[in-house]
Image (cartoon, rainbow, N blue to C red; front, side, top):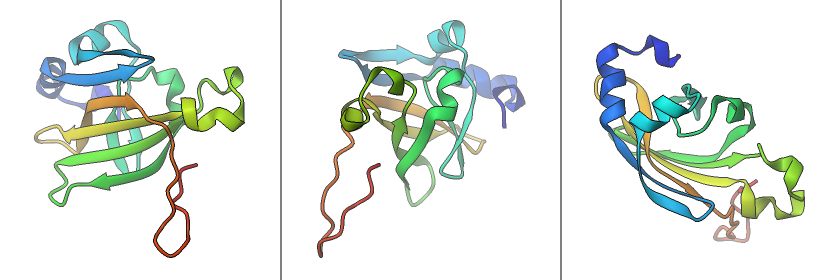
Length: 138
């Protein structure tokens, strides 16, 4: 699905939404309107769901889901993401420090599209599973 496939009403609704963002120590509420105005946005297919993130379209091929959780009623989605768009600038040994992102998304009413309401950097930590196994965080 593409943004152009959404109704004009759905697009206007998204533009009224705000989201919390913390990237490179820059934080604060952001307006989806400004991202539509100044960024090359497009929907992504992540974890078998259609998602809108405040990320330039050129980065999309480098984004993968580490793990994702939908609420029981499918009204919200939490995604732990890995974005390797900046891999050329960093050592792979330090990937856990620069490639992780957290997105909390709400479902756009009347659609199957999830829109980020929180988008933060995330240190890709790996915790041991009970019984000795590791949870995937690569």
